[in-house]
Length: 115
Length: 117
Image 1 (spheres, chains in turn green, orange):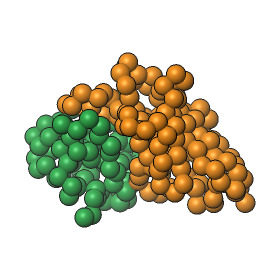
Image 2 (cartoon, one colour):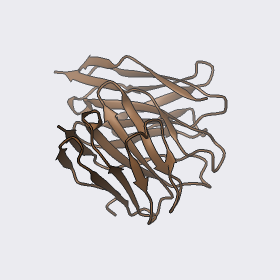
Image 3 (spheres, each protein chain N blue to C red):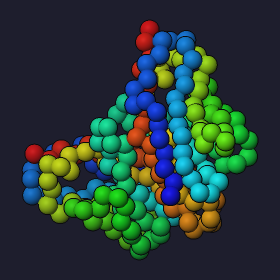
Image 4 (cartoon, one colour):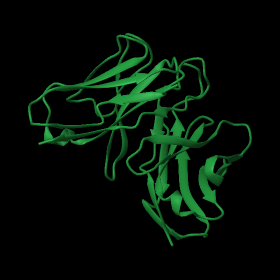
């Protein structure tokens, strides 16, 4: 099993450009998450999904959109990139409802720079 | 609401010395608690978890943590630090224990561990 994979690993954008980050998991997990990691700020949840076709806002959703059309994929979109979105983005997944605890499994990250 | 506080954003130890990384939580319900490790330029991986079975939890790479309800703590320890332990460590608490209500983890800000030769 590959676990959680993220595409691309690195990307440089100009202000105003758009892009989509792809997260894929092969563990049949229900829950999926997008985080951003910035120095001194830990992990901040952008959006998450508790099942195919569902999405919900996290603590820093502005400027991002997501879609979960297939259970195994969770896409994060930036419609008009801003320098403040320069960050490392992590995707994670978890088993889902019916489990008393949901440890999260992380992808390797995408390093995004917006100029 | 749950919250997590990691005391000390940077900890430095000598190789062979005791590692102690502190985590305190607040929770209105019995918590599930996690420690994750992030090596440079990598994603996070689970180090260990407390799920209400044993209060002393053993994890990978010789780490362990003890759940102390009276102190609302879940400190991470390792008897003898190794150079390869240099990493960022994150403590997290589950959002809830009810099935369907445990969707998110509440994260601490992380502690960067440096190991000096």
